[in-house]
Image 1 (cartoon, helix red, strand yellow):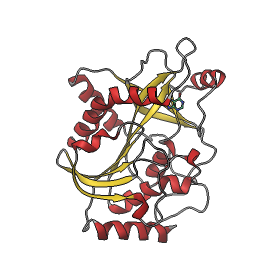
Image 2 (cartoon, rainbow, N blue to C red; image 1 turned 180 degrees about the vertical axis):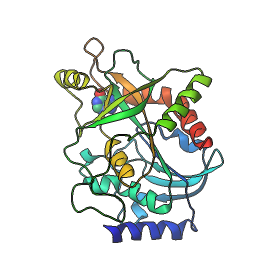
Image 3 (cartoon, rainbow, N blue to C red; image 1 turned 45 degrees about the vertical axis):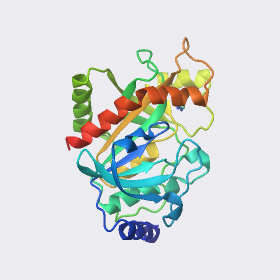
Image 4 (cartoon, helix red, strand yellow; image 1 turned 135 degrees about the vertical axis):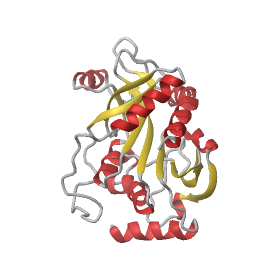
Length: 271
Ligand code: HPA
């Protein structure tokens, strides 16, 4: 594994002339527009990077983009890997480990999620303040890579409080409601049953999705502070639940996209 990480990192350093990103960004479903704000210096297809998995979901394009956002050096994953696509957890989080080896100091993650908190509305943003991992496994299972992080990483402060606070101030200044809450991560790919949505709200989740937690666990294992935000693309409370259509999820994400883009950009400017 360490050798594979070094192969991928070495290839990237070679192709980008030693570009050293300060911040890593993972863009979720329908949130790719942040890339338009980036002065792109290098763009590498996942398919060309040694040992990188290749994206299979149509709404993700599968590129690692290097450039400047708000005057800071960033690396952006345009398209992420999901466990439901058939990848192992090690493959899902491989790019996060590569980011760390490239020198990334903080990780910013976005996703699309179903809303469980009755106070939420479709297309609102929710800053993730904690998570519940309901994936069938996690990327740290197996022999620990001591060079990357500890065997038993602490998970009591997964989402960086200072970044959450800064995000709340940015949203207040921009005059939009930024929600805070707990994200539950399930494997998918099917959406949840009514009973499962009820169960998730009872155990304390405010939103549910199929990603993010594996990457976040990996980043924390390696000591990277994390900021994560969900777009609520559909409401899953008993009175508002309806059949989920991918096109509608993408449409709800698109409505939130300008706010999401602004939030991440301004947050990075402040680091
Ligand atoms: N469940 C899981 N993932 C999702 C949902 C949902 O309701 N909406 C968007 N992503």
